[in-house]
Length: 186
Ligand SMILES: CC(C)(COP(=O)(O)OP(=O)(O)OC[C@H]1O[C@@H](n2cnc3c(N)ncnc32)[C@H](O)[C@@H]1OP(=O)(O)O)[C@@H](O)C(=O)NCCC(=O)NCCS
Image 1 (cartoon, rainbow, N blue to C red):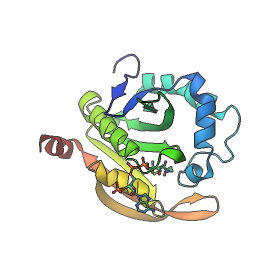
Image 2: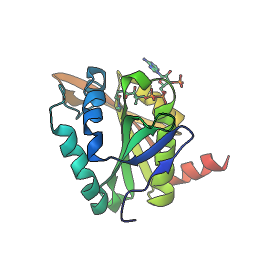
Image 3: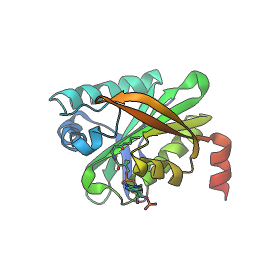
Image 4: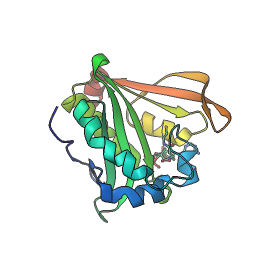
């Protein structure tokens, strides 16, 4: 693994490591209830200091080979608009993809664009064999991102996750390196 997390470029985005100075923006964007209610681990309200703590772990997680977390930055404005990352399980050559995007930027294809670049990074740079992702059944927009990124529906785990006193069905998607190769060779 390279020493520091690289920066990835897409048509409209720069995917770069988070910096501590991003913390206030993370607190504002990830602090929206619409984000927290669709994710398993983002606190709401988003406490002071939590973004600094989260960002502060990234470099170590990358160095240990446990995670690769990118800030999504709009090329045009240089504004941070969201986060996307891989939780890596290198002993199985797989990772879990996760993401959130600031509400003002929804439904413009940004997360799909970022997810495709992160999948390429997972297979071509990290040499992983499989990437999977899961969304709450009541969050079809996230399912669309997975579909549009070339992932295949693998099943639904019923009432698998307790979030805010509600038992959530989790919908799983995955893509293998061999499928990724076929899709990019089309
Ligand atoms: C999920 C999320 C990251 C999507 O980001 P995004 O940049 O808006 O995604 P994209 O624009 O690439 O794609 C969204 C797709 O969902 C579709 N969509 C949006 N709302 C939908 C709904 N209620 N039902 C069905 N499809 C919906 C859009 O039409 C689009 O599909 P299309 O291109 O076929 O029209 C963003 O909504 C978000 O941050 N949500 C809260 C946090 C979250 O859910 N994180 C993921 C947890 S698994």
